[in-house]
Length: 530
Image 1 (tube, rainbow, N blue to C red):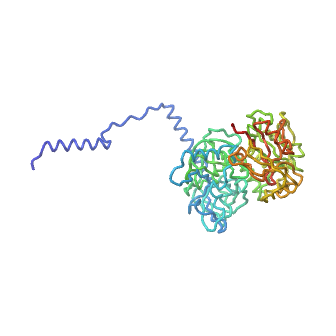
Image 2 (image 1 turned 60 degrees about the vertical axis):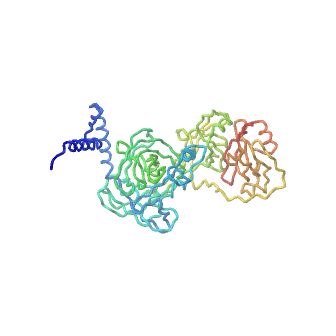
Image 3 (image 1 turned 60 degrees about the horizontal axis):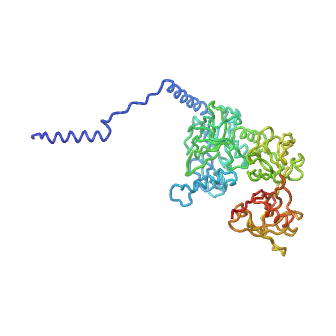
């Protein structure tokens, strides 16, 4: 066959074009120049991560749990043979892909704004595999060796309602475990195995942590044991509204289902917390994980090991957030940090210490207090019968007192009871149009119907106008206005005329609203611009 030079030339050109498009003939860019010092630093950091991972591995375990039939939640949050992790689902009401910016804005408002209240518990998904349900199933979580007596620390939601527990160590050894004690209020649990061959993790000091510190999370995400991820401490003393007592470490180290109960460690290999929950737009990690500080967890663990239960303390007060508006009405700077005492229960340590409604707590046991969640945790985990200094502001002046917490069971708060619909009264009702509500004097008969003391004074709300300042602050029909802040302190509100005079003189008033038996909450009503 005679060769056609033109055809051969065309073939060569086509082949060259093909190779060029595939990148075979392109010039490979030179690697970026990195100084030897930078390379040494990067290598040292990499070696540090490797050393920490190698150091903690023998102490981290995978926990396989078979739940009781009556204790299983729906398995939508339990992958068979894989882990469970409590999570906060980002809103996506339309179910058609990613949340919109408006959805995300609403989520942030509800989750991060201290004045918007805590997120609903169920938004985090079921409380682990131990919620209500009706199917047997396996869940997988994590834990770590706590001491040299066979105790292992994990989350309550990993092991609660368990029928069988099996622990797998890093070398593949599997042993049975029993529950020593669990505490739902803090989400901490201790289980025990018969072997003491594995080293306990050294405990760090979570009170000395700083935002930005490098950390590593170790556990069994989606059943993949001994998985290590790294990140930083993103925030401290986070409140998420999922535990009765909480002050979370927030981290961006990847935490997923199955990491629950595993350790968060620092670059010394010291455990600084127990991984517990995540905020997520889907089924996995979105960079917001919550970890129980080790100081709190170990305090709970020691009580569980000793007595099988936790002894919390109380002082007997009701709390309310200190908003800038409330601070201003109390004669304080709008930026004042603290919490407002909205009720002092009779016969309690708080009453004996001389505390009063309207006090603003700013310190306890030598620590500054900035939010109710942090304060409740400090009081709950304090020693019973031991005196502590409590600092507060009253009528613009800073004061202090000695207060002695007692066992929580000795301070019983009456729970909210479902309110009966109050019987319409013949008493004349008065409209407070500027704030959009209608009120009438609270009679002893109405107080009794509402579950309040018959001697309770105040004004009962008989109606609330939609879209009004009162409605925007969550005031409802049947609520009782008991106090108003005047002259830098809360004072009883005795008559409709007194309330009318106040609302006619001021564009903004701060009121205590009573609903049920659990004490009140403060709201600030502002007139709308006309």
